[in-house]
Length: 320
Length: 320
Image 1 (tube, rainbow over the protein chains, first blue to last red):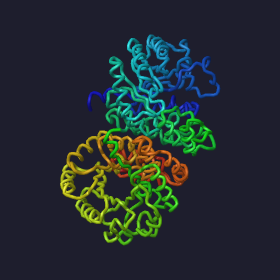
Image 2 (image 1 turned 30 degrees about the horizontal axis):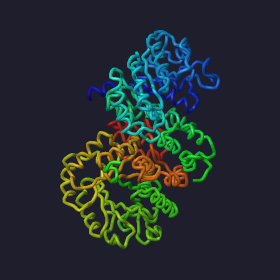
Image 3 (image 1 turned 90 degrees about the vertical axis):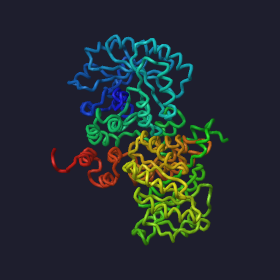
Image 4 (image 1 turned 60 degrees about the horizontal axis):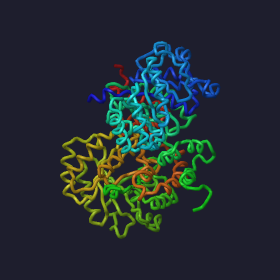
């Protein structure tokens, strides 16, 4: 095993990104079983949800608790910490910094801040506060495929001057090809010489695992996955594949198989994610999957040709 | 577009490899619709089945006709040839060379010979005959992941002296990682300097598309796929992804979407293929999927943990 491989850390996002599929309706038993599974499998981090504030984002009464993580609740769920660290994601404008306890009073270890390119300054302000309270931090810039070169350059100036530990390459639309990954990792490494990197891929083109492996090979350290690929729309890089193939000396597939058998297969019968043609279409067009998600909730769910035509015809309703 | 990309040709194996899933039970309407679809999409070849002889392989009365292709039947099905060429696969010992008409009397253009490494000499004898009758030919060496270096070297001596047009890299068990692909393509190119190459990948580790792209990038010319990935066990590289991303100037996704909507989605409700955990397990262990296929036909179909333990425990039934 070369030195690079030893650095890799897997961040399982099943609860956080998978919650976008089932409105965070995971039982305490499910979450505890997943935490046990990830500990046994040697997975480095578990992202246990969003740290949204119910004061800033409505809907707390309609969503599972993992969308509005509360430290008292978390302590009751995770009564004993294992070697798997806990992470929470925050969105700009939805987190109340007064909710963030000093790290020694929280079960959380890592706070990740998701933002669009024009919000990087605000994200870094939050990160500075979380860093001062003792947390590890990451900056996850979303929708990279649409970001212009000069926007990236100027945002990265701010990032270099910040305390953030890790900067993520996020393929929000699942549209990045391996050649794009090669370009982006090179660019990120050049422009952020003193930052560690992370990768969060979506599976619209069946490339999430391959692109994550490619990132790993190029020295990206934090690698996001989710068990059985559960995540919004086409889902994520499957954690079980990372556990099986990334570094057999460190990770173990077996505990994740138990989680899949007992929890994920029954859940997949009720909820939908994965390689589904309308998500492939938005991926190949480099678009947000929301139109495909709407289609899947309609009677036309399997009419991918009409969906493709609608997305690719300049003026819908007119003939050309 | 660089010169390399212009050389790529897509070989759709839906009927041939997909037939391993449904016992070649495709209607004439299905096959004609697929042929029309592939022509419209710009796909270069359609592998329409196996050219097995009913005299040499029993079961013709129990399988669909695409397992025992007959030239009279084929002419009745494909009444008008388009730009998509037609291909048939033959297995050593199951083809009667007397069944192979001269190419000008057949609708077939390409005959591919599948063999294991120890049968390369026999495969090349067949290929020589097919070549003399006017066909394009390929040699598809199966189960490469278990082939020893010196076996490959000595087999390739014979291949170099033969008339075969294209030699395939076949990932029979879906166990090859991108790093393996890099190694194999380099090796094949070095040992077979005057042969064109092909790639046939399986999707056990969600790497079929990525590995096929990697082959394409490294100059492999013939790229196998199947619509909606239909193929034995975990299936193949999806033809729709190749059409969408390989070369938009040459291939068109739209006709394939129609085929998926009208035929593949209903078929997938009756038949099973794709990323299914027991197939991932055989892929990661580098094994033939037959044990996983047996599991999927049993009441324990979703008990992947027990399956994994059985495959990885040296002596089943004993405790360790």
